[in-house]
Image (cartoon, rainbow, N blue to C red):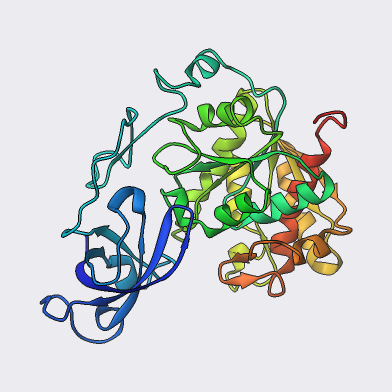
Length: 371
């Protein structure tokens, strides 16, 4: 199940919070290396220093190259598994939460909700997020559009990203999260389930939402996976089904669920044109609690198609039309790159406007007197 490769670090390409991107040359003497394409020559690799140390030029590294060889959506990277000749020192005191459990790279982290945590007293009996708007999305690419729109309408709003384990497990993989944090559009990230690497670590989505509200003092939480979600072209075989579970979690904890729609005018797959079947399944079948569903006021026949597709969700949820005035300009000025399925804002505006509509609606739910 794993395609192992040895490689030599040539240079450091760039770094961001928690990650180092490398150019590495595959070792020719490795009998598994040969042929054309990603099995030969140089490739891009990604190392997480907190797990494997910081590789330097000249180091030999051990790679997991399977997804790269199979041309899957890994961002074009082979993850660094180890720097075998220069192992990092043992970490200091660790917590007791084990993420990526029973895999060769399981990591011990300090959980915000575990005994001994400085936040355990706050979270031990916590049972409500006090009406906090919780925006749910099935793609990581929705996150910046949601944050940009909410911040444009409500400068200074405190937004926390609650990351599920439906995509990348390390939060460090996301340059989007790093950019949003540096530009002040996120107050922090809470990684839940098997995901790790956030500012706070939690066992479950429920405790993650509580930590976002009670520890990070967020006004709005955005629940979405990391990059690289999984789909199979079937009704139920996609990681975004968790968006429906997130609606339920937000409702159980006294939050205000806001269901962001996945919309596209450019996706070549008919099942994702207009409102994606993923949104219709997650919100129409999985979400048992009612949510606000912001419907972007898109023009023309395409806008009418989106409104028609959303009609079935009205049986359980509140469909709320959202005016888009000013949002195209706000998105165009986004401090981080907007990209979804390889398409940017100019390629597929409705994709990002639908997410931005959810951010606008969530910001409008806040008490005008709130800090």
